[in-house]
Each structure stands twice: as structure tokens, then as C-alpha cells.
Image 1 (cartoon, rainbow, N blue to C red):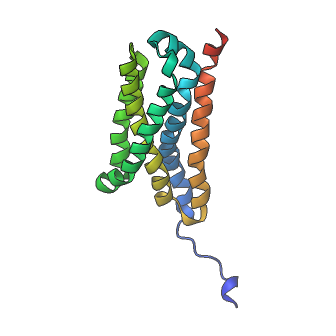
Image 2: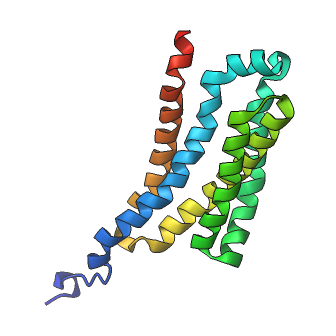
Image 3: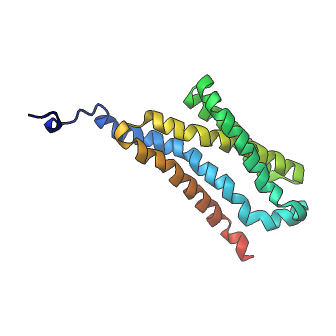
Length: 170
């Protein structure tokens, strides 16, 4: 026969099922990315009143996105220097501290520092999650698993908006 008639050799066939849990854990970073992007929407009116930032409430979103841009530029270099797994672990530090500072903020400065740290964290996450997924995925499903990152970002945004629904009723 022809070469086309031969059964394709797929060395990754057995690893497809074993890679999915790792992709799922990596996509927790994508959920955090989406959640941090959307979580301020429901609370913005309250933040404006409580922290006295009615005139510059847009600063909350700009701070996060500017810091995310900085973080995304450093994510690849950190992953090359420390490895993908260690970078995920190190990335948890600004994400946790940023979330805590944002939650306990009593003034604008603390809120902005928290959003800056969270922004750096989600920027690094936005760089290393797709990188990690593409490196561990079998070639025959790499495209599908790569798009899961974007799906989980959208799920994170949706979760943040759903979490903010009780605030919109009052």
C-alpha cells in the first residue's frame, strides 16, 4: 500500500487524558485573570462612595490594566528563568497580596496598590498560562486546549459579574 493508508503513529495518544488535569489547574490562572478584570464592576459605586474616588473611579480599571501590561512583559522572562511551575507559584504572591489589600482597603492608596499587585499577577498569568498549555499539550489537540485559556478568562469575568449581582439590588 500507500503511505496514506498506514495508521498514523501518535506517541501522545495515551497522554491526552493525563494532560487535562494540568491544563485545568493552569486555567485557574485564566479564571483569576477574568475575575480580577470584572470584579470591580459591581462594587464601583460603593468604592466611589466609601473611598471618595467618585471623580476618578476609572483609575481602578486603568491601574489594573497598566500593571497587567507590565506583568505580561515579564511573564515570559520569569518562566524562562525559574521554570513554568515555579513561576506559577511565584505569581500567586502578588495575586494573593493584591486581593487582600483590595479587600481591606480603607483608602484610595491601599486600593490602588492592591490593584497594581493584582494587575502584575494577572499580567504574568496571561503570559504563562497559554505558554504552559501549549508546551504540555499533545500536538493533535494543542489548538483546542489553547483556546480553553480564553474560555476560562470569560468564565472568570462571568463569575465576577455574578458575584456582583447582590450589590446591584441594593
